[in-house]
Image (cartoon, rainbow over all chains, first blue to last red; front, side, top):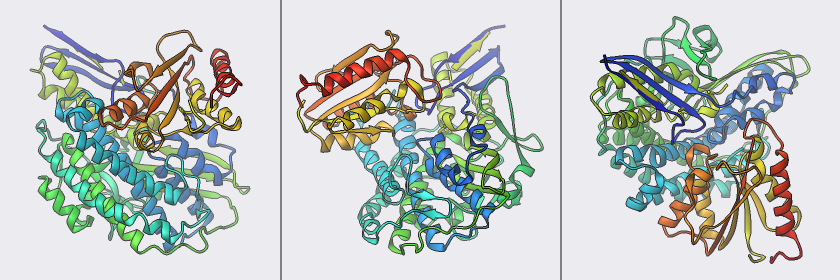
Length: 429
Length: 149
């Protein structure tokens, strides 16, 4: 019986370090493993003993791409523990900043790291030679996202203007208003890129996913909602750990998330879209239809289209929030520290980001549990790999390796976030 | 270099020697030079290239050379080898920024890249001795009386 092994020691165009190992015996795929080997970051451990008010700033350092997700989930958790109800103006400003993070993170991944896969190009450098206008447009869109984060959060990478209960300072009306012309441009630019990407040739594929995402009765979920699944689960954020768990696997420094009944599940753009499509703006929904996206999209290779639809939505939502902006006064709601447990959950660009803190009477963290999106998706990434390798057995090793790497990049995996977690080996007999 | 030169230190100070760029940028700013840290991905640097005509980029390298080895590249004249700078966020780091900018015709008038070979990229603060030594020598050179501001 013939054996084939494909190994990728360090995967390109993903954040952090990870590896892939595939072993085949004849037509049988024996192993399809996605390994994460960034050193575990021990953030949860170093949080113990720190003031709960520091949780948003410390956890925002887990990732330079999605700090707002960490700030928002951590802030919500501490606010819940302290009984803080933020004002609608603070909530709106947080959502505006989060739109900036969605725009810059999605555009970086979709247009600069994922698009080369479909153009048969090695990377963004090669893409800038053959598609310079596309790259310029993507850079300008990403800059728009960064500008939103800078204006609201004080800076784009690790925002400094945020705190438990809100913000240190409300941005001036004129600075928010100055974003409007570029947001108007951004809506059209995101739609153009989405339509452009919809002409890519996508490998045929369909995953039998259990989608899990926040849901909200009025808006597409970003920073608020209940946790729901495509199999009928509908629970408050506080019930997350009753239904989901994380388990250790030897080959990876990231935990693997599963539902308590053992099933893998999917978080991120495909899940959000499947559960919340009706909450998109009519124009973003129209872009989705024009891209050929149905009510539910199960082909993970087409997640790039959902990301661009979400960029359009984020620009539209930011425009709405910017036009309605009223500086929160006070910029933050404060409350005395008290003993308790708080939980927070938001939609990072890659999916659910859930935080839970147990806090003592002096405001110190006794226990912290952070569940980032990539660790939740890891079992599903391996299930996708297994399916894709079985469908792609006839490809030669080089083509199979490309397809496998693409399968992983479908997830925009943020390995730094997940480690607490790529290199590809295909092993064929 | 001129007194309008902007020094930019790339890297993550919480990944040991990856923090050499921000460390040196901090010391150069204290010494009166125009200098700043760059903690984000490289794509934003391209906008900065359009705004600043004279730039020095400082980053850690991982080429297999001895720790503390300083690589000097004139990026306007020389292509940046990607494997030299493999510490970037989401694979859009210094080399990608410079090479994309070159293809888009957006390089500044002068662009010097200083790469300092790191030894330890694990989680935590602080530079390893050889990297600290190299950074100190570069600081003295860039701030020193012989340096042209």
